[in-house]
Image 1 (cartoon, rainbow, N blue to C red):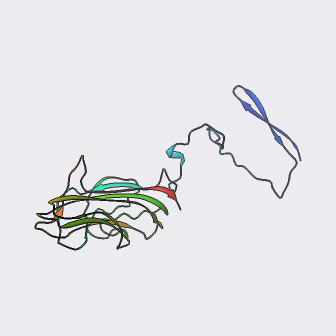
Image 2 (image 1 turned 90 degrees about the horizontal axis):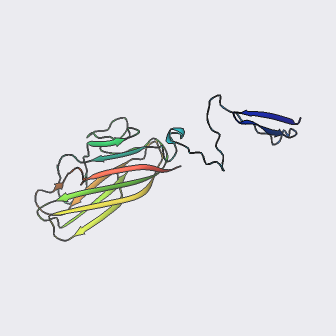
Length: 207
């Protein structure tokens, strides 16, 4: 069958030509019964965040947490950073408590959307004589990416770590750790505006 369908618009009309039917290549297009703009590859119309699904970059999980209270730690071993203050957590996927909640380990981010995430963290550390110090991102409970490391004597040091990391959306999680080699009264220090010790992340590409 062939023919044409007339489109009625406020300024006049237009035509859509309907070629002969071809069962092998015909495509059905469903137009929703709402007002709006149809967007194609040549359109200049904008796609807002609210128009995106929750599983795509730009509208996926994002979070920012920080250490609100100074944290004492032991020497010469990795310690998880107990970040309990949440600036934002769009999908409620960061656990700001000291025990597992809803399948998310303590002080960890476990996104519910599979994909590639930009993860950024910093640990600000202090001691009478650090000797050495560094931060580490742990993925699924094992050391994964190490941040900047101090080798020498200092009383304070900030270690930053950043990477794009894949998460499967069901079991993969990330935790920030820090380690101080020597000294007395070792610990992680805190601060807001600017933040001294923090962890953040967001979906940059869906799986």
